Image (cartoon, rainbow, N blue to C red; front, side, top):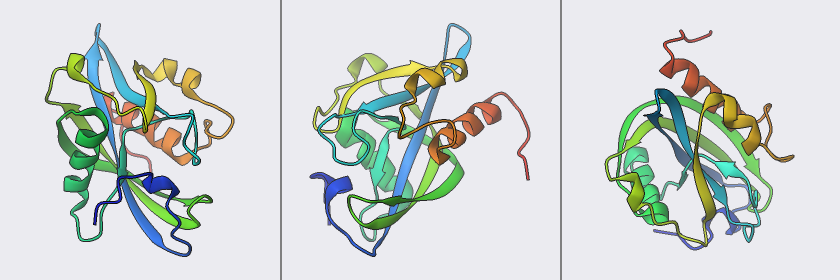
Length: 165
């Protein structure tokens, strides 16, 4: 069942939701950068917040398949997924649900000039280096946010740093 119409806003009180995001990276001028999109200001959940692209996994759908579908729906782009490297949970007060989010390394296989955003989902996007990440933070998403921590972890892994246990 595809609930692409405002998935983050459909009420699912007391439900467990699975989401997946892509840490889409590339080297730009010799520096690792990550693709992030700014949520539409019309969204009820986290409006105008930069995020990794992704979304809800449909019931019975494989997580990688759902993530590839979400990127296609939101940006009209195809991605190649690498390994997952982060998992965390969060509560969605708008839906009344609890989400499990999995983050995968990824790269676009289409030319980045072909990105076509769905304005219902996102207002803009950019490529950000690790040092540029703070400019994407807003009061509801800051350095203590689990997704932000995962993005920093993605950069650390790209830079060859070992995993912390």
